[in-house]
Image (tube, rainbow, N blue to C red; front, side):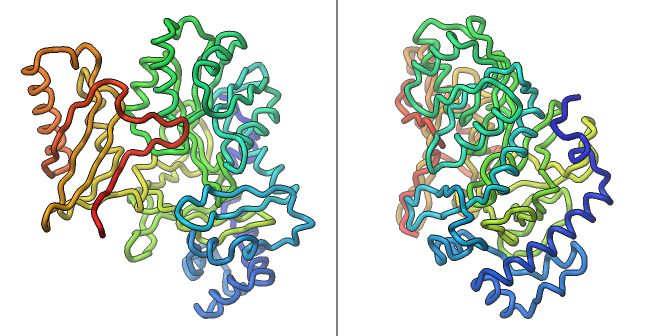
Length: 433
């Protein structure tokens, strides 16, 4: 079994909890002393730093949300002066002010360590050639993976996103062994490979580390069958640190959370109540080692569950299940919660269907209507109408069984649904709600 830092990754749970508590206390004192917004929140809740005496006391602290970062834009939640902030990243800000994050020199070292741990967990070594097709720039994906890959001594190809034919040429010419990008983008790459007459056997690719968007087990199988690689899920958020918060090991029985740096909770998204291990709910993360921008109980909006049993790989850190979806990406249709990953899982079980789809939600009168646009293979699309009708009826039946609601199924021609080099857009909600 490969480890980057076995001592930390296999730390006994009792010792890990002691480390978490010590770092939690230090973090709470830090934000209370240096961030007026946190002091005001804690004062309002009647909580002072000295009230945190055990890990269970974390529940007493107020949540932090993305809106808090926007309200304190750009640097209001930083605990360091700008003279000690050596890196700034941010979200795109497409729905308002971007969320801005800062890093001290120590934060960057921590991030590099976490990504080195993550890449090693997925089997990368100093002999790897890692093609990093996450976007560079203000997005954390590209640079996060980059510094982690260099940390383990791998050869890094900083290809960033886009220019897919060139990406494939680089994979061929440079002997890429690991690819990092979004799962939807690697499937788009495969389509272009087919157009170019390139087969997986023509490449040295052996593994992919895919994240930045939820993806199902069925999509994993589809990627692995097409590319003939082992696909690993990685998890992270810009606000927390970037990629490297959690990753799968070779057992792929959940993503190991770096608990020496983050405390994870699962809450009911509506009530905010902490749920028991194994329950599905919203992931809440507290950073306990960050200097420039520590966050207390940050509501990620990602829906998952946590397993704290020791993994077969020997790592003791808790594992999170693959993200089901986001509570703010979920659409409620006639009282039923629908996530894109649920639709994806159904579609990838049906032969002749491509892993590209779009959910369109409209309100007609007082009734919500769901249309699912589904790409079909070239062979099926050019087939007789009766066979397409039969396929549409089958998809509709399977969707009703899985989702509990009727959906209009619209079969569309291959490559008609817009591709993305970053996060795939899966839902268009046209309701005015």
